[in-house]
Image (cartoon, rainbow, N blue to C red; front, side, top):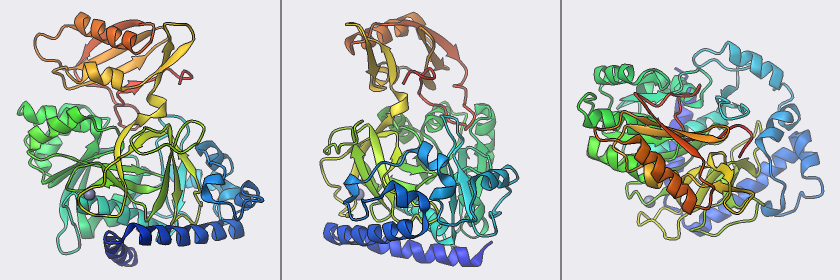
Length: 450
Ligand SMILES: [Zn+2]
């Protein structure tokens, strides 16, 4: 256990807590000050940003170019503000990573699984890493979970168990003092996960939304018998239907948390469950359309740009995330100054491109599938796009399930969305297979079509 890191996190948690009472004006003033410091740092220390923002040093944020994941990884060495941080070396280090080891003795490195495209790799110095941990702690606190040295808590995380996954790295840092966490591989067979959870009886259950749905189904069927005080859903779209199932299974609604390797926690639900509050003291979010123009509250954007105010090793200014999110039009009754995200509608990658009725092609929103498949009495579903057809996996449906009927309903829904209905095959499976990262995405687009 790293005592200095733990005390840093405890201090930051109280700092973060105090900002929840700020006014909107005070928050805006703080963002302006922190953004100026971030840009000053980037221009002084990063060769990449000196060129990328050339002539724009005084331009407002909204006029700066967008940083894509591809640019971040292609220009990693120039973008880094520490000349000793080199991508090739960091990659080599990740291959042998164990527990709470640090790169060059001072960087905690997390990486995405790279299951959906390119891997992103983020090194964090002590201050950045403490902030990432504090951002997750904030989400937990809002869910009524406040672990600390005086009251450690039993947590089960059903996720990716690879050592470089951010949640694994956070767990390795905070292990003994705060949290007795058990990590279960989301990619292992569901019955195995159920057995382990029954043995562990966690106070807090954290899982991808698709896994929460499967586990709620197991609980309602009587095979899973856990009684967590809180259930946190992470990293995936939490549908209304999964939310309702989890509420039935564990007698309380789950708390949705939105996080990414590049940012740590970005948004989380408070006890009012009106949406997720953006952590606007840590990131400046911009919801934009496909041409990077801002979209108003109530309208789903195509991209979310984030400026990570505490990023220093790799400054992230207008970094592009392909999540489709919508800002709420109404404030939350809790009075926190942070705006609400009404929903995450999925990733832009989740849109399926299909031939349109009038010729050309059309992008079909996941909601078209939700409206049919969420009504099924089943443990889960997945739509997989193939060359000319769609395959729909339905996990462990109840008696009376009719695959042909479901295929027809999906075709009708696609037709009313303007698509030329493709061939639809419905296949019954025991469980939805997990990808390399352990996630079970609802929609899997054929490569190169979205
Ligand atoms: Zn609230």
